[in-house]
Image 1 (cartoon, rainbow, N blue to C red):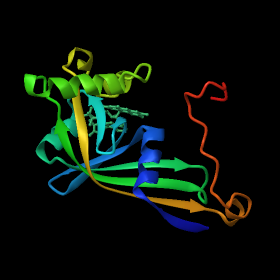
Image 2: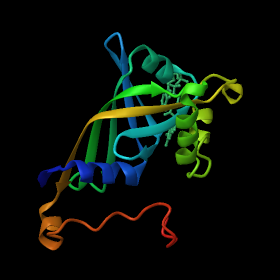
Image 3: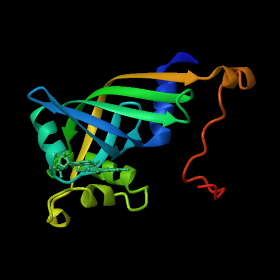
Length: 172
Ligand SMILES: Cc1cc2nc3c(=O)[nH]c(=O)nc-3n(C[C@H](O)[C@H](O)[C@H](O)COP(=O)(O)OP(=O)(O)OC[C@H]3O[C@@H](n4cnc5c(N)ncnc54)[C@H](O)[C@@H]3O)c2cc1C
């Protein structure tokens, strides 16, 4: 197995393709990681949506976060991207109106985009809660790709791009 380092463009390609990852935050030296959906705007921000729970409360206290994104084919064929960034809440105030509209535009391109945030909380009254739009301002992005010798032999230019879930060929 060979591990190669991805350039910034390739990292963003993976992040844009997956639009799903794990976000880690921390308070008082205690890390906390949860899966989340997001969308990408340019090569600067990840936009996401939630209701108030532990992760939002923790990111409000400490905005430094880490996001991990992955494409796993097998233990020998995988790509992972790690982002270090800063949480920014897009508050429901005139100051953030433009960014909130942008967040809604980006996130609502996915069907039922709001559901995981409302359904996965543990408090019973989440459905009545004010939605929280936020973005991660990306400060550092790195990526690694592992490929088996067989992949390198038969696909010296790299594996063909994985099929996307919303492609229209009906394979998913
Ligand atoms: C595929 C997928 C996509 C998702 N997309 C989003 C999204 O876009 N936005 C979003 O807000 N949420 C999303 N979720 C749900 C998210 O992972 C959290 O479960 C949810 O946001 C609640 O987090 P919280 O910190 O507010 O938890 P709280 O309701 O405050 O949780 C309290 C406790 O419950 C436990 N807990 C919380 N979540 C999980 C979990 N997933 N698994 C195990 N234990 C848990 C933790 O121990 C935590 O201390 C997604 C989940 C999946 C699987």
